[in-house]
Amino acid sequence: MHPWMTSHVAGGSVIISPSGTILAGPDYQGECFISADLDLGHIVLAKTQFGGIESVVDKEPCRCGCKWHQNPICLQQK
Image: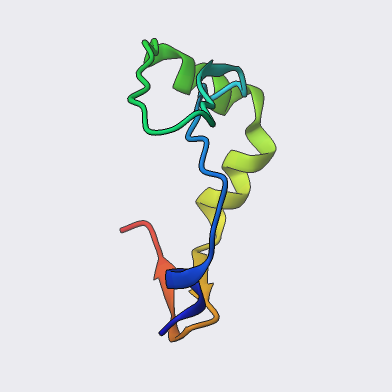
C-alpha cells in the first residue's frame, strides 16, 4: 500500500483568488461544501501584475513528478 493511502491530513480546502486573496474556507470542522464568486477579469489582471511568473511559464515546459511514479509528467504549450 502506498504511503499516501494511509497518511492523515488536516484537510481544509480553500478557494484563493488569482491575486492571493482567500475567497472561501478553510473549514477544519468536518465535511463541508465551499463556493465563491470570482470575476474572471481578475485572472488577466493577476497575470499582468505577476509578469515574471507568466514569462517563465510561457518560455519553458513545466515538469511534474511523484516519488511513487517513475515517469514525470511534462506539460507543454502546443
